[in-house]
Amino acid sequence: MSLVKRTKRSETHFGQVVIGPPGSGKTTYCGKVYKFYKEKLNRNVEVINLDPANENMNYTPKIDVMKLITVEDVMTNLNLGPNGALMYCMEYLEENFDWLLNQLVLIRDSYLIFDMPGQVELFTHHASIKNIFTKLEKLSYHLCAVHMVDSHYCSDPTKFISTLLLSLSTMMQISLPHINVLSKVDLLKKNSSKLDFGLDFYTDVLDLQFLLELLDDGPFTKKFKKLNAAMVGLVEDYGLVSFVPLNVNSDKSLLQLKAAIDKANGYIYGSGEERSIQALLSCAVGARTETERYDADFM
Ligand SMILES: Nc1nc2c(ncn2[C@@H]2O[C@H](COP(=O)(O)OP(=O)(O)OP(=O)(O)O)[C@@H](O)[C@H]2O)c(=O)[nH]1
Ligand SMILES: [Mg+2]
Image (cartoon, rainbow, N blue to C red; front, side):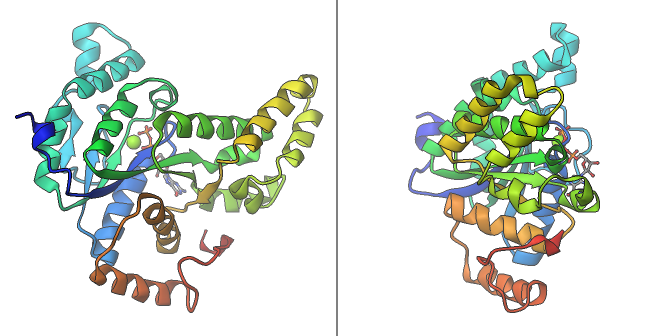
């Protein structure tokens, strides 16, 4: 009987898949959140590295794709460039799904954090990563995509519209419960005077007409009024994109994001964790509950 068939479907597993463009903060977040969940929440958690070119991991992965294949080896042996080699690695991982599953069954009781590579086409139209997580979903892995985007892109309306379109197409392609994250908001706060709007405008994505006005006034974008309106209209019509801000060095910020992720993937936590969350909350946010609307003071 194949490993897939032997994997008990009655068992449920939970976790998050950390995706996003290069340098958006995925690996840093994985290391921080691993420590935070383990030490502050007593959650039984493991990190899985699925980036075959991950050099500076701030955690020890329980499963490491670099033991199966690396971008460097593919570049040397198949004479491919770095991007092609990364695509090849993901296709290779898909073909060797049992390699991953064999190791996942050994940590079946753990909450899983997947650190992913940063090439955007892997999440917008290439099929391998989607296929891997679809297979896991069918095996009762309840995963939430945590899509990190550098909040620096809020500083320019053209970059922000690209971010919105990227987030929307990634949501469509990956098809998992999905949380978009604006990473490095601590840096954004330091440069808040350079922003056209307050942080809420960028996180809530509610009234993009203001963004359209800026695009229509921009020296390079004003000649594309219809295109600007079509792009903004597309994002508004779907009504799916919004962001949770994150400063990875703030426990309060990690806790806010945790609440959103647990809600999205349906994570059921044990009473031990519930107690520690209450303790953390009383220290970090006074009388407020974790479901209450956060403001910018955690940045
Ligand atoms: N100030 C600040 N810096 C951050 C934060 N999160 C990540 N960084 C920095 O952003 C840089 C890139 O972080 P990584 O974690 O390597 O990003 P990544 O998405 O894993 O990058 P790739 O794997 O290459 O795609 C590092 O220098 C981090 O220290 C944050 O919340 N605040
Ligand atoms: Mg990384």
